[in-house]
Length: 216
Image 1: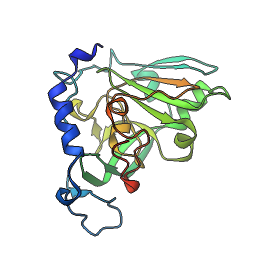
Image 2: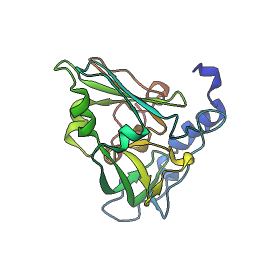
Image 3: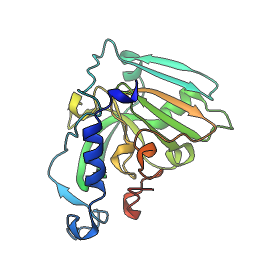
Image 4: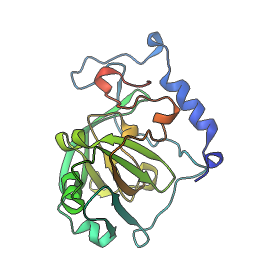
């Protein structure tokens, strides 16, 4: 997807929202589960699309490609994906634009199931999540192995709505939510790091909410 197709007005507005002066940030509400600079929302917020509209992928058309520096490249259709072991999760979800949803319910496939299928090479250090709207984000493979990470297909017991990244999206609770890629299309394993959509636009390469790693 060419850069000119991205919604630049939204991208610029979001940059300003993240750059809020510290004195203007929403106050921390005194709960140990809220990182600095965050306020609690009672429900998930559907962020605007980075293109003119959300990508709409039916389950019959959805494919997940797993490739790169792995021993076994795979392509899963929706039925293949649902055959993988899944778990129910209750996690805290922190958006870089300062809101957090605590105790959010998801059902999804643990990332370790993807690792079992793909069998990354010993030289593999990074994972790039690719999405149907052209979005990408980069993660350290070791960190994904050591923390909760899953590919969600249900939210609050129902199919994930398109506006929240359905039919399948990544969830990485310990990092800001831009790392939890929506509209998942492919998982690429590689030896070298590669900044993704927001990382190449000034966001921090890691994104720890407890350290307020919003911008690099």
